Length: 192
Image 1 (cartoon, rainbow, N blue to C red):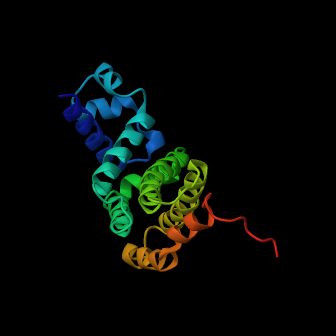
Image 2 (cartoon, one colour):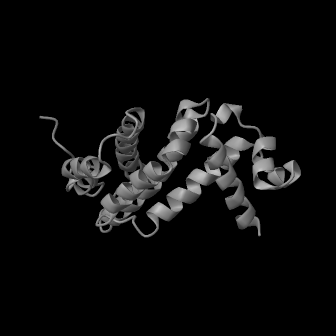
């Protein structure tokens, strides 16, 4: 029942976002549209931004289900783009409202989860510090999120498949190369 109510609240929020901006929507509006009390809303979420974050995480989890390996990362990223595109009114409204930072935080968390799994998979058999693996995953996370934010700023006009193909061209073999550069079991590098 709890997930059903949360999903109903998400649907109500997304319906309301088709009519007015996020900063004009109240908890009363959502509760009324959903046919529940305000207290029921607060039983599930602390505020509207908590609902927004939950909605983003739910959509992302579905998009990335099983797509977090080196061979499937492109499909995972493409599915992230597709989820964002499918929820365009929601994302654009949230992005252009006072909670724009929420979209960025959500994308950073989501992308990091994908990239760290790819890095971990590629690091099998390589002696490398955890901090260096995190650094590599963060580097690619920031690159991907930067591309996606530019795409959102441009009203999602460009075909996501083209963006992913370009990204794949840049990343081809680069995770393995980066991991090898950070190996702790190789001879020290010469400065000259």
